[in-house]
Image 1: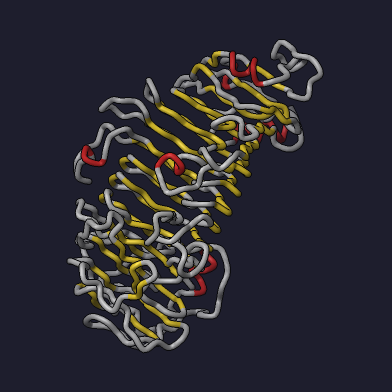
Image 2: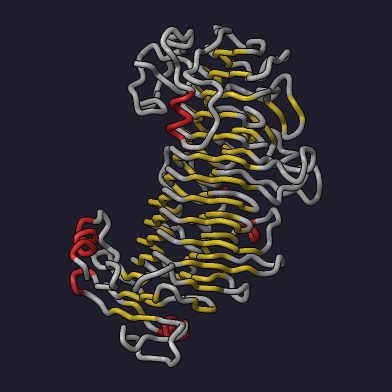
Length: 518
């Protein structure tokens, strides 16, 4: 191995994976090699590699083992590894040699290109996966399952997953098809997934979901309140640094989790199969959200270009984010949302206890500010215990709507808090924004003000004309200039986060909006 390559491997923050030549971790474990372009089947050594997936699927991985696929080659079929690593010496599935990522092509003939069932202590990295199939059943790039045992310490990183097609309808079966998906069929009250990291993957042109992580078989009726432990939920689930593009449905969904972290992801162009919310063919999707979960944190993400559906009247949801029913303690903060036809955020209004905080986000040119909908119609609840504060909204027509129906008031707002937000209309409007009865200390520009203690002046952004991608670049454009009437005009709130959109300290007398000038 060249010295520079060896040095890079030694300095890597995460060293559970082998270096590029397939060397093992601390000399522990066996290295197995697969070259699907080889003319004859070998014994699995580097000089005599296996030539198809059958031998790779037969080996039982042990701690420290490496199952390595030759770069620049394609293996047809489904990889379904056996065995497990250990906490000290995870097993690894990855690449060796030079050239493009090794490609596993499931060809729509298998449920997934890589099926990980009842595995633990495993790293999967540096593979290209495809699985184009018919539209009558779901397909996945990676399908992670807990069936008869607990799944823990799984890392899925640096994968290229694309052209995965399958069922895209609005049901749980279809949603478990897509780029990286999971399901728990393990009937136990104990944790079923513990320690799953999905990071730095590129996922594009998939249906239905980009990343759909379902971590428990427990029903929603078994979910406790947010301040209580939930041992049956997925624990230590982290989805970070992924890029997802052109999705038939949802971008990232965490389901059945406790304390999941979804951060630094970029999601572009989704809900491509969205259909009319009032029809029997209803098909609804959003960029990033959670369901049947407690204490999820969704932060530092960028979501854009979510479609409402097939047309302005034939669609559903299409928002960047969503605080759905059946969740508590969700925090959505420090995100950049733009050009989402359905709007910035969906707020469901059903009667189960559900709480959430939406703070210090930036929304530019989204179709709505709020989409307030009864997601379990005809069940109608309120938006009690939802807090929306210190966000910045910039759009042509700021409005609150129930899907396609603009609302002058939110009749079931309950005690929902809408405070310290900037609402900037780029085109003058003659109707105020519906923001409930607990609407205070917001700045409204180019539209009539709402609520109490409002500010009705231009906020003085650094560059209100700026448009583009990049969470921090967007934030810089919509910072407040010196002399802004938003500075120190906010309502002091309890339990605020330690920092604003940029990581700056929040003063006792906060500014309105996502930026707190020094």
